[in-house]
Length: 424
Image (cartoon, rainbow, N blue to C red):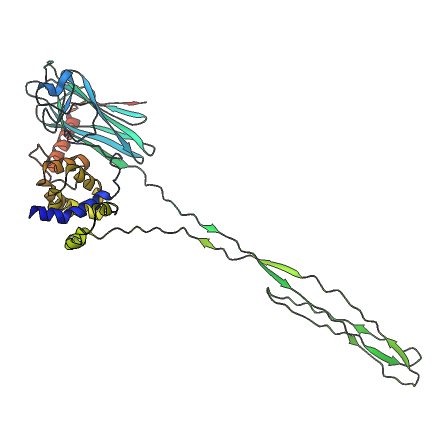
């Protein structure tokens, strides 16, 4: 039955893995619980369980003591760089503890961006898990790098990992300005229209007969009418002359012929009319994702006909990744690497409280390698996974956060951890 169930869900898993990964390096501190296989931190050994786990006095992450960063007898540093995508305020919180047989072990924490640096100074942690924090640095450019550095050593130079142990490290990033808004470019193409108007003029010749003495004066009046023609209209106007004639009163005829006057036609008039602007809008690209996960699970026969190659060529939406992460059956049937790909695609900031709890319920009883992938990729202190109990711990995230806040308050009131700021 288990294999049948895995066969049904495996194609859906490949669909999720085919989706492009979210960039985890931006704004996220990797491996906040210091798991030996969680990555993120530079400068710590991740093998061995006896004194060799801190060979040469180097610090150990996750194998000397599960989910802890343990320091040895040599003063050394462990660090991680985080890319902050937009200008933001950045704070670092931690929880640390000293062993009862090394109560005077010391540690130090620094937080720095491109032009600021905060330093806790050397401090001694109590023998119970206690929270600590620094102030904030403010990044002023996109993709600015923030560096977290942790250092420490024991107080009696014992071989092994007997120095201060850090159990939690968390980064709080708050953008200081909204992202810029891009306005699409509009291109206007002008259009030219030419209108030609032609006006024709006509002259009429009139012949009259009179007798001597000289005939009365003949008055010829020419009247010209001007017409305004709208564009694309041709008008012809004939203008007849006006003639006054005296009727004959003798029998002696005299013939006078008026001359014909021809005037050249006016040249065509070109009138340019500006066109209405034409707006060009950039095309809109629509991405179509495959069917939702419930539809895929409801039709297993159709999925079996697809090859793995064809499935991985498909895309999957963040909503589908969320449904995969909420499925205990899917998490039971995939490897740690595949689980890391699934959790990377989950839109954590957009999850509802119910979705976050459903993911916790599915991950809590999942195989250890799947849980390690979950703790490596997901920011457990974001508020959506408060009921989750990490590997190697017996208290949920909400209790750890409370411990961090209470410890920070106590330390702020007592001034037990000195802090200094320098401007570079």
